[in-house]
Length: 205
Image (cartoon, helix red, strand yellow):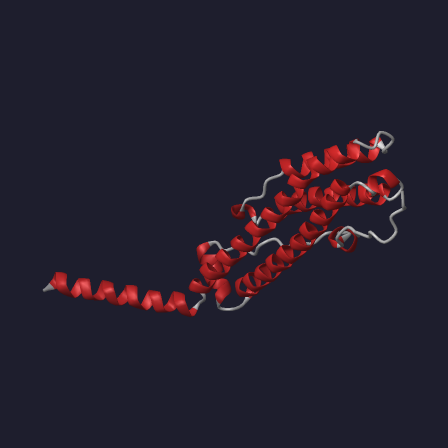
């Protein structure tokens, strides 16, 4: 009899606790946390796609013997720094790690923009079909990066609003849900703008 009553009380407490957690946003935290992680995985996927294009781009540019070596070196070094910094979904609530990651990707974006701008001064390079195809691929990748990053920003915004709102903030404190670091870049306009691909001004050979 006593055991049966205890079992019933335990089940009742579990039921009440479940309702309480649901009402305080526990399930929403689970859902939005997974959405943020998924969105971040896509950001990483697009950044990796960009990094994978760079070696071929560099090799193609090297074919232009007089191309500025300093510009190439900056791209190569920036790519090395960017690929060396890994930011897993579990590290998304670490603002310092996010800042380092963003800085490295921003430097790579700036170096690529410089390379493509300088390439306009080399008629042979501009007329190189392989180089132009790589530029188009890079432009498409930069667009994908921007879209993926914006989706992540929105996912983090939804998560952080939940984490800071009462009574969900109590659930956040209880289960250790910390606000996630947002994604901002100091020179966002320069970095997020895809490289301009203009075939209309190519010099005729």
